[in-house]
Amino acid sequence: MSLQDELRSVPAKLLIEGVSKDFTARGKVVRALDQISLQVNEGDFVCLVGPSGCGKSTLLNIIAGLEKPTEGRTLMDGKEVTGPGRDRMVMFQESALFPWLDVMGNVLFGLKLKPNLTPSDRREVAQYYLKLVGLDEFAHSNIHELSGGMKQRAALARSLAPNPRVLLMDEPFAALDALTREQLYGDIQRIWAQRKKTIVFVTHNVREAVCLGDRVVLFSPHPGRIREEFHIDLPHPRDINSVELASHSSRITRALRGYTAETPGAEYGAE
Amino acid sequence: MKRVLSSLIFFALLILAWHLVVLSKHWSVVLLPDPASVWEYLKGAAADGTLAEATLITLRRLLVGYLIGAVLGIPIGLLTARFQLAEDTVGVLALGLQTLPSVCWVPLAMLWFGQTEGAMLFVVVMGTLWSVIISTDNGVRNVPPIYARAARTMGAKQFYTWTRVILPASLPFIVSGMKQGWAFAWRSLMAAEIFVTILTGFGLGQLLHFGRELNAMDQVIGIMFAIVVIGLLADKIFFSPAERFLHRRWGTGRS
Image (cartoon, rainbow over the protein chains, first blue to last red):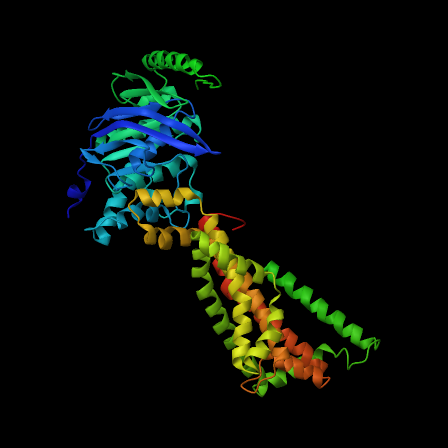
């Protein structure tokens, strides 16, 4: 294997067909997702936005294969998703890094499960991704020694390392302070351009969605439904504080308020 | 260095106080021997080999029993945490028996195994096993579910997830359980050695027992001293480094 082969990235196409998901809570069946259909093309950066309870994280877990839909199916390049797989990596809100391994050990974890790689290949690949997220000097740090932003960078390197074709991100920056978040917006746009991934990004922050996504898909809760989709045709990299971005996000926030008002008991406050 | 010094001064003062109490002649020297005569006993026992032999015999019993207990306890704890059926059966048994002071196994062991090494081993294993099961079980239940989810997305299968994620993630609990198991095993072994006189070898507990029978208070106190030192060393040599490692990695507690 050459490093070039291992790093070659081919984004995948996702097709979500009529996906519904029911949960049973206290003996009552609750519909979390209702008839969701969505197509995500190769190399798309799609943001799923909505208030809590709209099922956007559930949809992400279904695409990841961590949960099974009650109805419908998800296809990746025409093949039905039946379980989790290396071709679809997930980045969670909490970093979910393993504290018993150092940063390098965490990035190597997924690579060790990948066949046809020698230990030195794995180190080389891990090193590449640590450099990509700017953590190459912290390869041997313990997880608790990292700041919140560095933890998410390490988690990003860990998700990228097995070279997935789809990256699924579940509010990965929600727990970070604003300044750190803005840095990571820049990083994720750069990495997306460089690594050519199909990205599905879940957030409740409209500005964040507009800053990152080329498509912003709006969800409303009880049950979770897709209400509207917005195309953001601003050039990358985008600055979260730019005026054009603000006008897009206020338009989307207005729409979101409208849908949320239809649902009794739901509240939505833009950030 | 400063901390070592304050420890040394403290213990020197303690021994001095002991010596002064003996000098006051308030108690008979049969009941309270001078520190010097305890030292003499220890020196003699060390010179003629009784102390080393007894220590070795005791440590061998302890180590064998302790290892059996830990090697059985960790997988059983994993099973009780994973399977409802194991939790409702073995898990409940372990919870119940863990509350039983381990010295309570001694009478049963004597009746079942007689005056044999088997009785000793049985008592030590019973002292270790249950607390290791409970803490392993507890450790696994405290592993954030997101670790296993993350491992699954990276392509880890069941067995791999258990050995490479769940087990290391529960390590802090397992280590504290093993420490507790060690303490229980050590206490129960001493009880067993005091009660069970067997001819296959005299451990420290038996020397303690003979000391009492001979009214040799210097021997009783000397052996107690040896027992304390072994306990301290076990802590310093085995558990403190393990705990320091965990604190460094996990960033928990003081480092």
